[in-house]
Image (cartoon, rainbow, N blue to C red; front, side, top):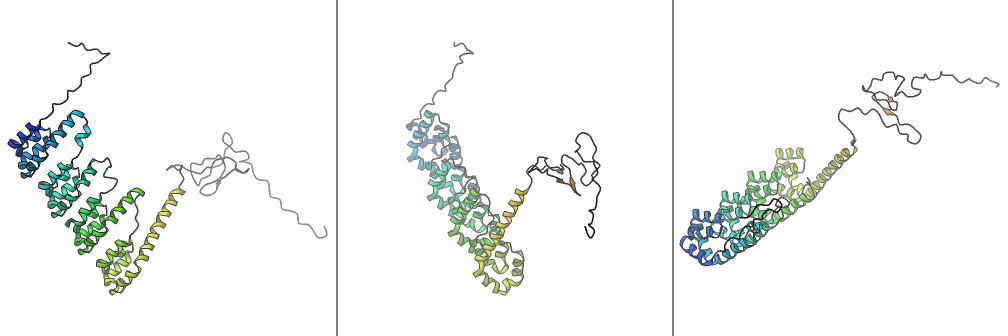
Length: 374
């Protein structure tokens, strides 16, 4: 036996897993493949359970596995020999397509690629009514590449996801606006069915602009600037009700348009030509407001403590003069701390007293008026 030594502990190394045979894998595929037997054999228990309850993904996955089984066996043996945990987390294009073909309408490929949000959306909309399912046939390599990258999804939004949400029928309900954190437009699209379909169609062309605008705002910080395309989009279908004025922080004009139907249509037509100026003026007001807010913050005393009285100033001389601090009703002498602002007791002699503080000023002597002749 081996005696355990505290100074030289025994190192136990795990033995490599035995390699899998292609012949055995094909045997299980033919006999029990519809129930996932070959996946259990190749250390893919999740796939085995999925095949067991979906009858080999309705038989389509079983047929595809006949041609890709050598790849699965080779992949299993490589993962076992290298002992690299990152390889187990790597997503593969063939697996994604197997899940996409029969189960894509339920979002199985998005769940596999860790796109939980899109997976849930596909689950309740039957693959975005089939449109998103068809688009994913072309975008699958992009989805797999993104899933294997180390870039977190919270930094930038995906162009593919934005395209799918904007083009699919879910765009009528503002799904792409919710995705890009445009909650106001999302709610508007939800209750007006994509601004009566006009905004839904327009967003087919401008969703790259919306995506770029969102990602840029994440880099430089949140910005509340208004945009000309958004203003015109609100002007055409809903301008008679003053929606573009509400968007441009002009609530009075918005209410006026709402109760006069866009000033009987005349104001609505004039706004077509002056919209760019309205947006420019709104952004100027926003910039001025932000500038004033920053200035007010910079003026604040960095050493201020709430509840502390700041009646004193440092007694360091500046240019030969001792600075004097001012209280509520008058100046305070240097070095004097008044606990009650506005009440100034008589300064006592002793420690902390200022020389000459209690001395009375010299009597006033009027200057003599020279008499005539002197």
